[in-house]
Structures are given as C-alpha cells and as structure tokens.
Amino acid sequence: MAVHKHILSALRNGPTRRNLFGPVDREQLQVEYQAALHKDLEEASIRWGFDFIRDKPLNSSDFKWEGIPATKVPVLYRSCMLEQAEGDSILAAVSHKGGRAQSPQSDKENIPNSPERYSLDLEKLERTPERGESTGLKRKQTNITDFFQAKRRVVGKPRKSGE
Amino acid sequence: MELLCLELDTNIRARPDPNLLCDDRVLHSLLTIEERFLPQYSYFKGVQKDIQPFMRRMVATWMLEVCEEQKCEEEVFPLAMNYLDRFLAVVPTKKCNLQLLGAVCMFLASKLKDTRPLTAEKLCIYTDNSIRPQELLEWELVVLGKLKWNLAAVTPNDFIEYILRRLPLPEDKLALIRKHVQTFIALCATDFSFAMYPPSMIATGSVGAAICGLQLNSSNQSQWGDSLTDLLAKITNTEVDVLKACQEHIERVLVSSLREGHQQQQQQQQQTQRGSSGKGLEELDQSSTPTDVRDINL
Image (cartoon, rainbow over all chains, first blue to last red; front, side, top):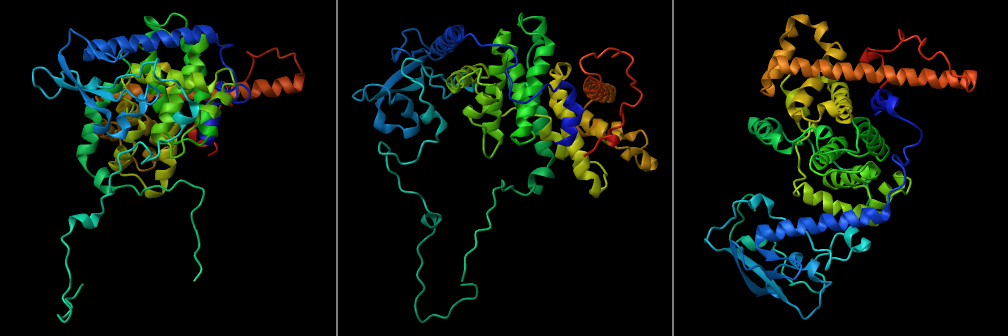
C-alpha cells in the first residue's frame, strides 16, 4: 500500500473524508431518483408485458401471465410484497406464449422494484434476511446422510477393515 | 481439556486452487467474456456535459483512498471504477452527484468482493456527510438498473495470477511483483485513458511494466531478451505492438504521477519554509524525481 500512497500522493489533498464537488441539491436528486426509477420500471413493463405498478399484465404482451398463490413461491420472492396489503396473496407467474422456455432477452431478467410498494427501510436493507422467518415455508434441512442407504451392521459378523 | 479459540480478527482466505489456476479454460473464459463489461463509449465526448476528465480523476483518487483506508480487497477499487465508467457511459450526470455515484460504486463493489463490506453510513462519512445513507441506497438501485445487475465484471486483477504463473519468475520476487502490478492496475483505473482498454491488456501491460521496473529482466538477459513482451502477448492473446504501447503508456503515467507527487512534496516543503510566498515553482529541480520504481519504499 505504501507504493499506492507514494505514486498517488500527487492527487492527494487533505484528509480522505472530504466533499469533492460542493453541496448536493437534495430536492433535485430526489426528483432525478424518482424519474430514473420510473423509467426503469416502464422499460421493464414493456419488456415483460406486465404493469408492475398496478400489478396487472398488459394487454399487448409476448407473455401469458397467470396468477398463483403467494404460498407457492419461495420466501425470497415474497419479501418485496410485504409492504402491500396482507390479504393480497396473488403473485403472477409467467410463461412465454410461444412455449419457449426463455425470452430472447433472458439476460435482462431483473425487474426493479416499484417505488410505490418499496418503501426504503435502512435496517431491512442493511440486514441479511434471516432464514425461516415466521412467514417462511419450513423445509427440512437436507443432511448428507439422507442420500445414503440406511445400513445396519449385524452383530456377530466380523468387522471389515475400514469400518 | 481446555478449548482455545484461535480465530483472529482477520479474514480467512482459501488457498490458491490449483484446479483453477492450472486450467487454461479459466483464462480462456476470462478472455472471452471480458469485453462484455467494458464501457461502451468514450463518454466525455458525448453523454457527459457537466463532467470533465479531471473530475473523474478526483473522484477516482478519493475512492482509492477510501478503499485503502478501509483495507478493502485489491479488486474493489478497479471494480468500482468499472461500474462508474459503465454508468457514466449511459447516464448524463451532474458534477455535484459524481461523488454520490463513486460512493455507490464502492458500496456495490465492496459487497461483491469484501468479506466485511463497507457500510452505507461509513461511506457517507467519507463524503463529509454531503450525502445521506438513504440517498446512497436509493441510487444503488438506480445504478444496479443501469448496469443491468451485471456486477461480476472481469477486472485486470483477475488475470494477475494466470499471467504470473506462466512466466519463469524467481519465487522470492513474486510477492513484490504482485504488489507492483496491483499498484499499476490501480493507477490505470484512476486514468481515463485506460478505461476502454480490455482488462487483460491492462494486466499484461502492468506485469510487463512491473518486471521491467524491477529490472528483473536485465539480470538474466539470456532468459528474457526481448522475449518478455512476446511471451506476455502470447499469454493473453494480445498483439505485441499494442501491448508494447500499453506498457509504455503505463510507464508514462507512472512517471508523471511520481513527478507530480514529488513536486507536491517539494511545494509543501517550500511553503513550510518560506511561509505563504511560494514563488519560483517553475524553477523546481526535477532531476531528483525518482523515476525508478525500485527507489520507492515498499
């Protein structure tokens, strides 16, 4: 690291803790943030043929959407719905109309959360979600021995070496 | 029997995995996918109106200092700069939001590479509280969207071991070479002229510059000759001329960076000696500038 310091000392000015380009216009920043999110969401809506704000499929879409109960999907996919009304338990599942398993743009499968139902909560974001929270479907942890056939040594038989 | 906990407050590292290091397929895969993560445009000529190249350098230097102070993994800084360049290539950004963007990029890169990632609060303190954790988290989402969540970008650091393994280098010098290579890679990341170079070329050029700088190639001339560049070029499938140009470019940036650092030191000395009358800056003797990497204390 000393090399870094020496070579890059030219660019140093004062302590590392510093404001580089003056004050940030908070209101403008918020406006830009909302606009950026909204644009992302619109693009995602067009791409997937699904209105993520109203939580409804679009009429003109390459995909055929059908609803499935929230309990049938892993907890991971439910987390961002928690802020919504609890009675609303329907998530949408997607299948391609043409029967193809993947869309041609399968590398862009990530959908940003809509700002409406995604209230930022620092504590939640900074924390890794714990497994098996109360809402979770409890699933038994698989043990490696689950894959072995149960064997019992019959008493009286001589031990094989290595047993 | 007494049980002792020998766990220290250091990060436990896996040993280098020969299955990965000795297999050519890994290097080939890295070479195949690296282009996908390059910024698409030289954004100062189009997208950006408010931001100048020197501002990129300012934010890059700040980011490097933060990464150093927080003892981040070596690749955190180059990876964060990759995010920054890819974002700036598509989103016109205001000068006053550039530091926020830099912080967000470090936040993401650190999550990907560090055992104990930088926290939002800590990063905000480093901006002298000019941004709030809330804003950092909000913009994290925006940046992720623009990067299409493709965060596992190939960095020059990914190539270091694959290149070093294929060179006949003395075992006892490896740690020193590695350190120099990492420094050159960080230096390249602060300089926009390297932003469009493929990571493998920056890595190869940095290894070349490190070996030449440490003059490891002159002591056993018979072994290397002029073949160092040829050998390096072959490892990462780079053209010899292009690689030579890249290495020279790195060496030029290094020399000018050292000179600036030296000048600034002298300037500071002068200022403390003469008080505020810091005249005669041009007369500064530059002959004592260390242009030999070996003169730098490690």
